[in-house]
Length: 463
RNA sequence: GGUCCCUUCGUCUAUCGGUUAGGACAUAAGGUUUUCAUCCUUAAAAGAGGGGUUCGAUUCCCCUAGGGACCGCCA
Image 1 (cartoon, chains in turn brown, orange):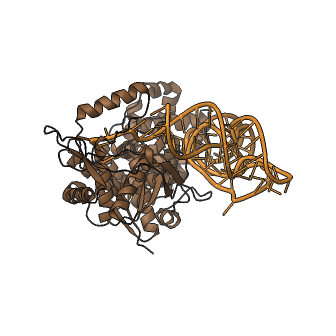
Image 2: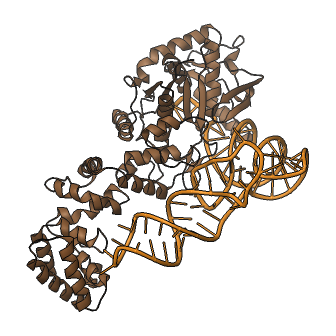
Image 3: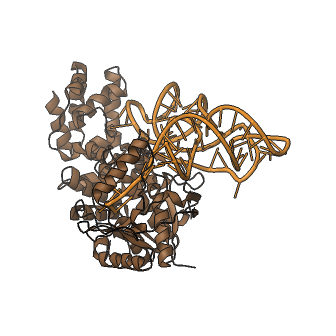
């Protein structure tokens, strides 16, 4: 059996898109599942729009989610000469020809086609150039001689058999008039050079497969398997674009999504294995296959991402979680410096109340900050009765030498009785005074995680 | 407009002709936790429509409708 090699081939013209991450993930998982290779190819032949920083960002994003590529990144622009050579060979083999149509000429044809409401397809004017005189002011492009009649079939691993009439495929350009190769040529040559066995990509590339297949055939190369996966749609049901909110991977990193959670979510978006929802890394690799990929596009659901993240936060051990939190805070919030011990210890309860790392960060502020801020609204909840309760609590609290849950419970229970109230009547003002919010960890967890002097200080600040 | 593709709860999906159409998220209602965004239980919620094939169709075929992708000397 042929060795499996897959690839992810983004162009570095923008930050990595969530759909791209999923494509990369599927490729990576497929290769791992087959003990094959996974390569990263940077398609940077669009010199205008390609940026080094995006390339770095793409690599970083893949790393973040745990995707490692084999070998060095394959840089497409470094292989331009190879691509050109293939164009020459195609020309020699009579599978391609020079087209001397000027841009104006092509544009004119397009306009006519538009007016008539018919699809534009290059009229193959130069396919047979016997009776044409070569203009000396036009630099030619090289076009591929596509099949004119008959049908082509691709057995797609996801889509099944796709059958199209060859007449719908035009004589596409493979070499521009400046001598640079186009995507159709470069991608095909590179896939061949890299010995790619399975091309897994978004189904917006489906038609390209038919063009590329013809190049493979003309060159007598092995044709890889194709798997065109349905696109991820925005809420409006359109292909996700960079304009859509939360479409880049950074959008998720910055709200504190864990890499494993996003990996798991993306895996289940458009792919399934029976009823199973949670897949750890090993299981992802073990179960991934192309037969589990659905055929219809799917929508992003932030609730699902959040709930997946919540699950992973709860099920990550404190050490790993802390490491994630520390990195997260340093980049997106404030660096945790001297309070790391307290936070690490408190993670056992902080993680039970958080959907994101950001939640943990917010809920841990009372540990980090010297002074806490109380919103106007919460301040309003502290009426005279509550303030009195707090004062009494403080009095009793200062008396106890050994602070533990038992002692605290005693104090609070007495306060409830004395003030003829319930737990909320005592707990809520306490939390507001100590944390600055109605929400947060359990009362006992809060008090136990603070220094005695901080508790005293914060309670005094209220009265 | 042409070509190709898709269509099960609001969302992600299971079902490989026979199920009370299952699960998860979200929603609602209860219940624990003497507060809370945790946890538990329950509920509501789907086969686009119409024809076939079949003893029997969500499942196979056709048509219609709706949606999408592509139609660059971008990738």
